[in-house]
Image 1: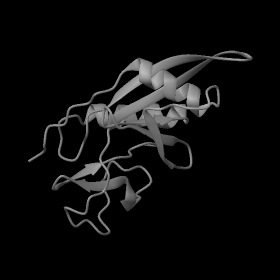
Image 2 (image 1 turned 90 degrees about the horizontal axis):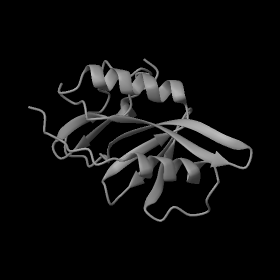
Image 3 (image 1 turned 180 degrees about the horizontal axis):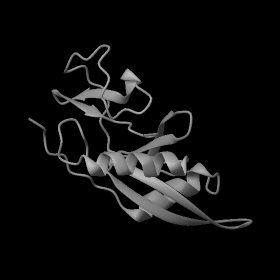
Image 4 (image 1 turned 90 degrees about the vertical axis):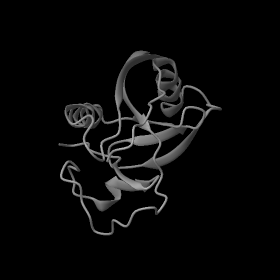
Length: 142
C-alpha cells in the first residue's frame, strides 16, 4: 500500500533556488544543499519538506516524465516541474527545476541491493526507505 504524500512546492521557491544555484545570490535562507550528482544538485526547502533539483534539464524532464506516467504506483512520489527564468548579468536564463517531497533514508525498510525498475542508472541509492515504505527518489535519465 502506498502512502499518500503531499507536495508543497511553488515556482517562486524554485526560482529563488535557481538564482542561488547560479551564484546570483549569496544566501538562500530557506534551503540547504543536500547533494550533488552527475547532472544535478538537490536542495531541500525544509519549511515545505520539498526537494528541488537544479541542472540537467534533460534529466529533470526525463524524471518528471517517468514519475508522472507512474503517479499513484507504489514507491512513486508526487512530482512537479517548474520552468523558471532568472536574471543573470548577461541576460535571462531559462531553467527547469523539478520538485518532490523530501524523503531522507530513515532505515525503516530493508532494501539492500534492491533496484527499482524505473531507476535509469540502476543505482540502489535511488531508493530510500522513509516512513516504513520505499520511495524512488531519482528516476532521471530514462
